[in-house]
Length: 618
Image (cartoon, rainbow, N blue to C red):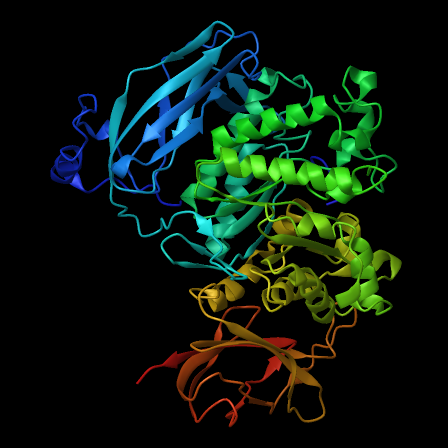
């Protein structure tokens, strides 16, 4: 987001397989393996982190410079499968709180080399470290560990996009539909803020957050560090460790944004970070102008090193939904042509796929404000709207497409929420990839503008639901988590939507989208937005007169809805209040087929109501 408002559990399940299971697995190890210590410390489980401190001193003057030293770990698993994982420099910190409530991180140990690995197969594994320095190469002795079956019902593996799908699912086939918000950076509480926010989100049923690595929080490339030595930012890396641990405890998926436009922006709406950017030649960096970040060989080399480090430290996590190369790359100063931007994204996305042993998804983002404005005004047919970044979205290395959409209520730039979002998602879906409404808001400006525009959270509510019914793989992901959502305690908004979408196999079974279906209601205009599959139907029924900027909270009574069911037979489900999550009525309907829709009564509602039906195979 183009705003600088700075500072304004997954359950840990014990290993229960026991020594007998451990003995069976370790006895299957290859005869060439080193002797195996059969203690539980040398065991892991499928999709569970295996972390080791390496017996290597951090001797290089700059351990972040691969020209001085690189450390990798080679792993060989069942059937001879081989993986190479980069190791990383780690420093431990102790957390305390200042008198003002700010987080204080104090280094409490020497630096060390570590590696993190998440196995995806049971059996006997072995590993060894490989170090390359100016003086030559050396390798450690082979060590072994066993990987036991996954017995944690909350652990499903890494997220994937099945061939041709527009939604995501876990490795074990468990469906995933993202419901959540942006929590891009912390307030003064640091990691304590994330403990608060993530726990509240998880309690509400949310399962997704988007986190940044900006210069004012968890970024590594900024003061007091230098461009190529990030030792002075290891406290920021420790904080991000804590965020990822919290995500694992609370079953939260994280999109990690690696670079913000702000340090490379001139004359931005909310200022510029170029004057303090270490890439700036005036500060000893390599760049005369910000746009050279896409072309300068040294700048690109620094970013390659950076990607290696973030993959080494956080690429182990099944709770990492995706790497986001840029937040709003288009707001950084752009080269004269788009070609260097395309080339930069191709190289860095390809490098992430090469480095990451778990093949996390890769994306980037753009601001999209002009398209939102045109979509709302209807001046340009959105299916034909020209996107400068189209060649970037078309890159095969970019796995899914993002959309950011803000209204500006304070300037009178307001548009019907659902219709606008539907048009925008349709435009981005033209690339044949999954789409996510990854940032959204009723005003691009700050606290007061958003509270004045949306005092009841009705725009916030509609952005969540419009994203969900647009065909995107998640809800609309709203901004202002720290200034509006948390102070106003709007977490309850996530619960009904999470409940509605739970377990729906979007990635495996085709769903047909029906938007704006007429709903018969005496003296009122009511429409239904429907996602219809062969086994599940989801509907969001709205009073068309209601928008957050022209609210109509009158009661809708006596409405009747013709169900566009995909197959004939018995369907059962319930009407849900999208505000409270309460069940408003059960539905049990027998229909003869899609061309003979069954009409059902809609319960009385104000603003909107939701329906879920599931097919019963009798």
